[in-house]
Image (cartoon, rainbow, N blue to C red; front, side, top):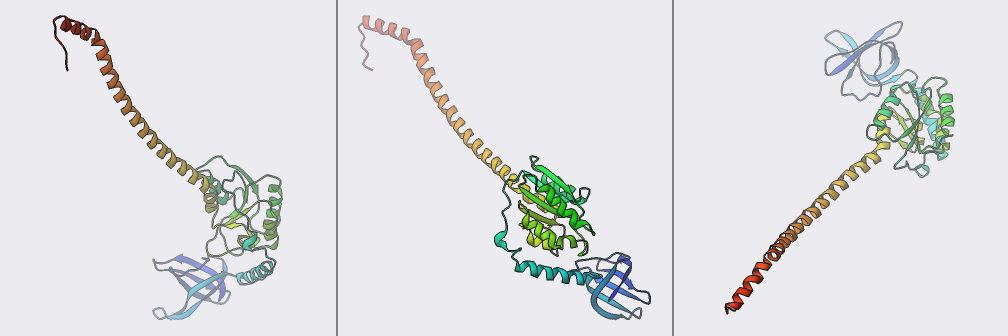
Length: 298
C-alpha cells in the first residue's frame, strides 16, 4: 500500500502506530516493536508498506500490521542499484583480490564528508581520543542531493595531491534515497582509482552501498572508522605498558638481589674492619702470652 504518513506516534512498549492516507482514504497501521524494519517513517513521508490487513473488531475497522517499509520509489532505486552492482561485479571492481591493506600505523588521514556534519565530529573525536599524533585532512563535500556526486569526486581530486596513508569516505545514516550518491558508478570508480586505501564509513547497519563493496574496508559508522585506525596505536600503547610492567618487575628483582648482596658484603667488610681495628691488641696480647710461656694451640 502506498500513502502519506499521518499521526505517527509510539504507542505502548509493544507497538508503533500511524495512519497511511491519500486524497480519498485513510488506513490505520501498526508496527510491532520487535519487527526488523530498516526505515521508520515520519509524518508527511510518502511510503510503500508491506504487511497483513486485518479487522480490528473492537473498533470495527481494518488495520494493517506492517512488516516492511520503503520510502516511495525506493524499490526502483534498489533495482537500479542491483543492476549497477551486477555490471561492476562483472568488471571485478568488488573483488577481494584487489583490496588494499589498511596501514597498521597511519599518520596522514584524509576524510571526505560534510565538514559541518555530525559524522566528521564523531570521527575526529574518536580518532584523537587515545592518540593525537595524526595529521587529518578534511575535504568538505555534499553527501546527498543532485550535486553530491560531483562534490565528492572533487574532494577525491583534492586529496589525491596529498601523500595520505588512508582515506575515509563517510557520512551519517539515512534512507536509500539519501545514500544514492554512494551507489553511483562514478564514486565506485573513484574509490578504485584512488592512490590510497579507502575506508567506507557510511552510517548504516542493515543495508549496504556500492561504495561499501568497492572500498578496501567497510565499517558501519564514522566512529567505527576512527576506532579501527587508532586501534593499532592503542594496542601498541597497551603492549608498551605491559612491557614496562614486566621490565619494572625484573628491575625490582635485580635491585633486591643486588641489595641483598650489598648487605652481605657490607657485613663481611664490617667483620674485617673490626678484626683489623682490633689487630694491634690481638698482636700485643700474643706477645704477652709468648713472654709468659703460653702457647696457643687453638
